[in-house]
Length: 130
Image (cartoon, rainbow, N blue to C red; front, side, top):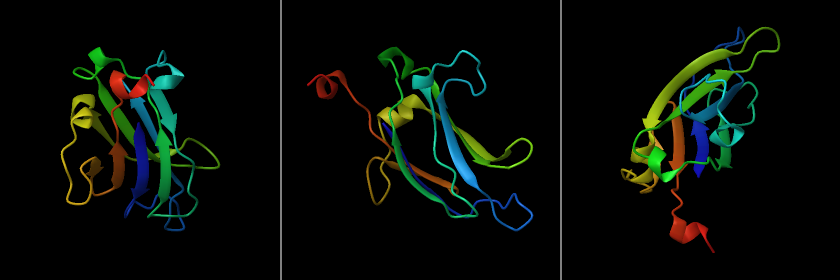
């Protein structure tokens, strides 16, 4: 499970000094045409906001053997009415780092960066087969 919480101080991409941000996430290379829907997700667009709060949870299908080798690619985009959306920023995180979280001062399963705050929960066979 991945929980997209919020963005802070995002770059203004629109002429009015704001952005209409949304987040895309994908297990494996971004833009790979054969990526199945269960391996990618997208948040809602938050209009005219540089400090968006999404508070959205997603479940991405990941096999045990992928945890040691695959990456979670995260991109923040500005939605445009005309033309292609603008990339605000991106990062990639090893799935292994999400399955064994490094604690933050507030919550042992949350990760922070200057622009994005997300939380993860790793489901194991013992807690998913109930």
